[in-house]
Image 1: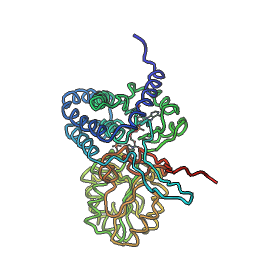
Image 2: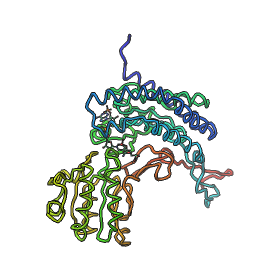
Image 3: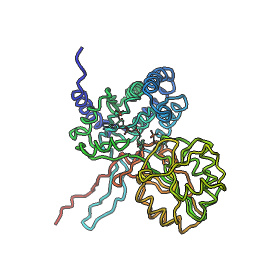
Image 4: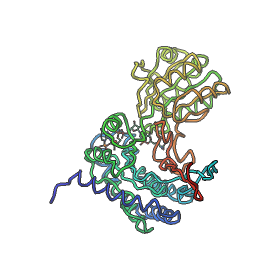
Length: 431
Ligand SMILES: NC(=O)C1=CN([C@@H]2O[C@H](COP(=O)(O)OP(=O)(O)OC[C@H]3O[C@@H](n4cnc5c(N)ncnc54)[C@H](OP(=O)(O)O)[C@@H]3O)[C@@H](O)[C@H]2O)C=CC1
Ligand SMILES: N[C@@H](CCC(=O)OP(=O)(O)O)C(=O)O
């Protein structure tokens, strides 16, 4: 048997994607929606097959010692499958934005100038070991009329192969090119190196992952990149925060799920309310086993007799690196700040500019936070966990862009499109 040649494989995927992209760009809305509905049906029918594939991944991951939150996101449960199937149906029900023309205006010369929304072409995506992302990316590629080359996390390879087969079948059923969505068939990272350096085939790269991934992409990519990076997200509890609300939001932002990029990693509390608020949130964290990495002021409050914390509560002295850390685990950094100015300054210095929230009843503080915090999503009185394409009404998401150009925050259909100018004349010439 011939050895698997990564370079040949990637060149073949690239060429096939380029051909498919041309056909996808001219596919009509009804055909794309047939494919999406077929994919939803096939996902529901394939439950047992997907379970077998996913079990192989889970066994390998568990044997390799993957942490519990990471194993959790690898799971392709019936609920996860139903959610992505529903997502495909929701996308099918959404208006097709491809071909829409906006801003048509007549110019002094007589020509009319506007902009048409068009697919980007071929996007290459590198993402974490979360199999549902394969379907979200595939369904968004179909709806937006793009072709995609998907390189999922290595722990999810069996699940992804099974899912990619369903996508090909759904595309074929609708009469669309099966190569519109292709999965890289190897976990060899050399394939990533090839994918990001094929400008003749791939128009944009979408990396979803941590710092190691982005270092490589930034160094080696030969095509534009829309970065979907780490989330060092914060909740700031302001002087006037309503405590019940603040407790609910901070608890949810930290503990509803530990692995996502939109989970809170840092809690900032105004010194005006710190003595009262911190023991209450710390009691919740202690009950859930959340380790608290505290600055001296927070540590003093939580170690005092008045706090009356369970002796088993994990109150640790924070070090400088804690402020920049994305734990993705039952750990949170806690700092007492003088007020909204210090909170904004801290966030702008240490956050990864992903998602940050303020809990307050002060309108001026809320407005200042929204305007001055330089992050892709800024929130008032809501959990950072809402930073998600589905929750933002986009139908699905490619991920959460931490870039400032082209697309910022949760990226849906429009983030996978571009606008080109269209000019309508009646024989005008330039003088
Ligand atoms: N902003 C967003 O939308 C999202 C951001 N994230 C972020 O992702 C991170 C957690 O996910 P995690 O799986 O640990 O991320 P990783 O960065 O470790 O892995 C993500 C993907 O990148 C690949 N990869 C990583 N490093 C390299 C490299 N040097 N060369 C080639 N490929 C590489 C991985 O491949 P392999 O399988 O071979 O390791 C995997 O496919 C967190 O920082 C989280 O915040 C996660 C989801 C969404
Ligand atoms: N959109 C997602 C967040 C994406 C994300 O961070 O995924 P992961 O890092 O794989 O857990 C959500 O909140 O559901």
